[in-house]
Length: 265
Image: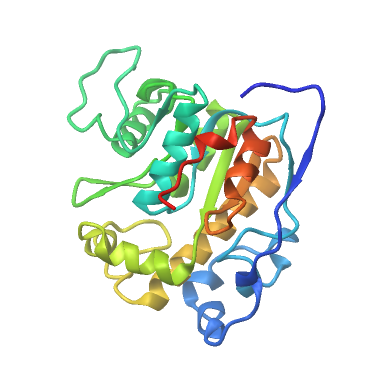
């Protein structure tokens, strides 16, 4: 990402979704959320923060370093917008599919999926991202194809990603939570696959109800914010995909023309 002399601090605008909504108490009381360790960063009301960009997050747009990793659970349409935006900006970008660039040239049965490639590289003591294509941008890290291809690096491998790339930029992309849940239900059986993957904090059999999906979503958003809070060499960019000004926000953040943010509207 190009560095510019004039530094601009980008502030995430407050979103309507930050307001309390009826039924949020169920999410706050979830046992999944109660498993999240407390920190000063997480003293912010979960109900006011986990379904939308945090209103107080700032970052220096001149210090966003590669690789840029989408560490959230974006739906396919939003991931495509991200990939196309960065590709338009001249960055080597991929979504879901990586490639084998391991130094040992070891063949990998499932290496074409980023999640499986990263998992195997870590297992073999190799740098996870350099071994899997060394892309500038990855807009989907995870793979969920049970029983043998379930791996979510943004859940299981933040430590290893940090050790390899301590200045990586992380992205969390938000859209209306109800729309996200509906897209998950329609997305090629992903709900059943998720419920069979035994992800940390999301054990087998969990994820078939809307409340369980919301709890997992909230748990993960707070996990990422906590990790960046304790590893401040990373920048976290939180994006509201529903805002009309999202194209300009992306342009200001990543120094790429807003015309590269192409929606269907």
